[in-house]
Figure: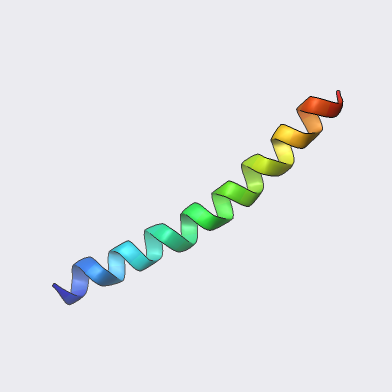
Length: 32
């Protein structure tokens, strides 16, 4: 149970970073 919560927390933090990363790429491609 605790392990599952811990893994979910990691996935959420990684998703937040990925969202910002892809947002930058999307903005660059939009301007191009």
